[in-house]
Image 1 (cartoon, helix red, strand yellow):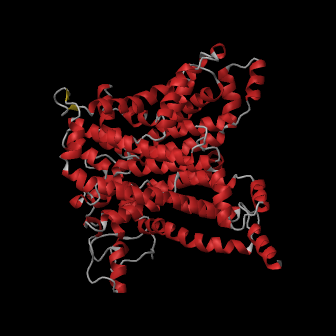
Image 2 (cartoon, chains in turn green, cyan):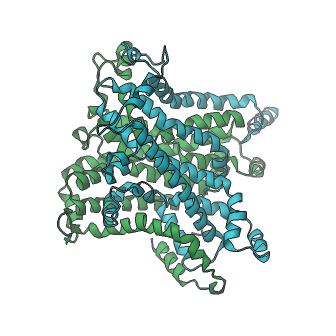
Length: 312
Length: 297
């Protein structure tokens, strides 16, 4: 954190290239910066400011200091009892799980010939194109709660269950289904980045490794591949973290309600939307947003520490 | 000794990115093929489901594969009109226009910004770079509420442009483009400058043609976000005729526990999914090319 601030400070201090400055550059960055400010930077700043107010969208916001944060931590039963455990459970399985799966699949794909690889990579990547929610109909049919559901029928026929299970509205099964569906669609941009990274590792590095006594594929992966593609691993990790914590639609889309049945699939983003758009407690919702952004930021810093280059 | 040598050569035969088939690869395929099959099943199911006639959709016991494929679900979907008398084609048209606008404009502004960030000098360059890298960690849904308030202040609620504007700045897109432009030797640009080319000409004539893979990648990224996004219509748009297909699809799936809608909903999912797939198939080699430079250093 300290290092990070000193870096920002050094950015402001650097004045070495004043003469080479090109005013036309501003014209080139202006449209992007404008949109970036309006739709990303200002909303984040506004969320931070609103987090310290009470705001019901009718009257002007009133300052309440840390009250929202204190309430979240001490008074919000659903948050402590369901939302945080759910989000953690979901994030721990989908985040690192999906990430390791992406890497292993990318690594496996790099071991086969290009034509086979292209076809398989396409198959593995294409679920991520469905963006979760668009496929809600599919999951609703497969996991339908009566005997017309494909999964119920399948299990009934095999004799595993005696009567149909209401998968999507049950407290026990909603979360595992959400996790499964998300893992299915999690080989996205990060997966492609790691695949490209592995394919571009210089072959000479492996030759050198064999001379230095690398004995098997596993050692090759640990000692050569992963260190070489660290930058892509980091990119993939950031994408996985953002995707995991930003996931929101899936539980609500599957169960068809917010809050989800008995809060079984309630994630932090659903909680934010519930307070913001159902209860109109904007200040409180903003405080939740700030907590979410901070969690994502610190988890990402951890990924940077793991994969970032040493001189950073 | 002999044994050891033999084993070593065997594992070395399976180099990363092999150009020829070697029996050793079979063990990798034995892992990859079943996983791919599992990944593929839900997609096969939706294809089959969309083509099922009414009797098969609700046949008991349910069948995975379609027996008599038909386009009747698609026909019903196109014939259907929304609650306020708006035909489905209107939503599809909206989605198409919005998607094209976002793709064209976001490519333009992120390549321009990427060129400046990579090859030009200006005050605040490093700061912008840093902030954009931090913004890779930005979770859009977290700020839905302040975003809503800002959009309301700007008077953009219920305006067509609100479909387009929030999706124009894509931090990941700019990041990838910048990394890609970094690969272009500065000598090339200096040479053009000596020949009298101005920045706009350098950008148009040299940079853009060289970064086509990165452009293809932004195209896919913004296509996916915009085409699949139902949130804008749900949150910022009140007028039905301004809503998009993704949103309409969502209403189909939630309102059609009534049996007849299921086939149409499956057909609609297919309409959502297939363009994604086609675009990715066309552009995939370029995307892999760009991703090789995606590393965060």
